[in-house]
Structures are given as C-alpha cells and as structure tokens.
Length: 107
Image 1 (cartoon, one colour):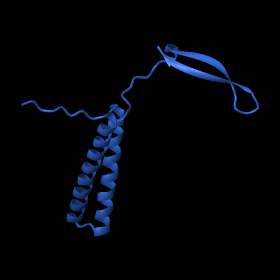
Image 2 (cartoon, helix red, strand yellow):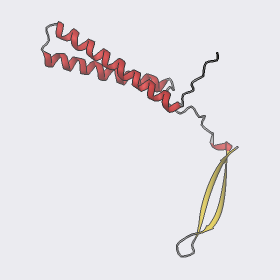
Image 3 (cartoon, helix red, strand yellow):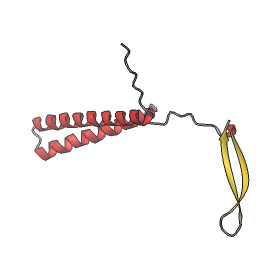
Image 4 (cartoon, rainbow, N blue to C red):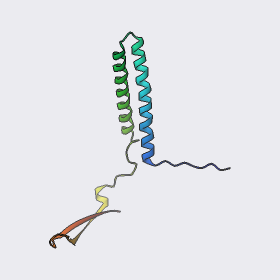
C-alpha cells in the first residue's frame, strides 16, 4: 500500500509558519501573564506583561524567519545583465499616438 505525498505551495508554508509563530506567541504571553499574576502583580499588570511578551515573541519570530529566508519568495532573482529588453512601437488607442512598450525576457 503506497501512501500519498502531500506537497504544499510556498504560500501555504508561509501561512503555516506565521500561524505557528502566532500560537507560540500566545502560549508565551499566557505563561508570562500567569507568572506575573503569581508574582503579586494586579490583573491589569499581568495582562500588560502577557501582552508585552506576546508582541515581543511574535516580532522576534517573524524577524528571525524573515532573516532565514523562510518567508521570502523562493524564486531566484534574475540579475539585470541577464535580462533582454526589446522595445516595440505600437499605435496608441488615443489620437493615433505611437507608444513604446518594453518587454523584458529572461535568458
């Protein structure tokens, strides 16, 4: 019996990574809030502590994933010298003016 292979698109992978970062950030925020409340903070102070931990962890998670290239397009950038530019003149739709259109192709 063969199993099926599931392939995810890059957008699905990015969404999964951001969702995981969100879930872990919520967990960190809740733990920080509970610990702050146990440390004799008032309820509003504990909520502020948990919110600060959530924002900090979420920001760091997104920054680290972005720095590692996990959130970027995985398509390689085409250097400018490898592109060809061709210019063609077409008859414009207004007043018969000629207009230049540039098309770029990758080699």
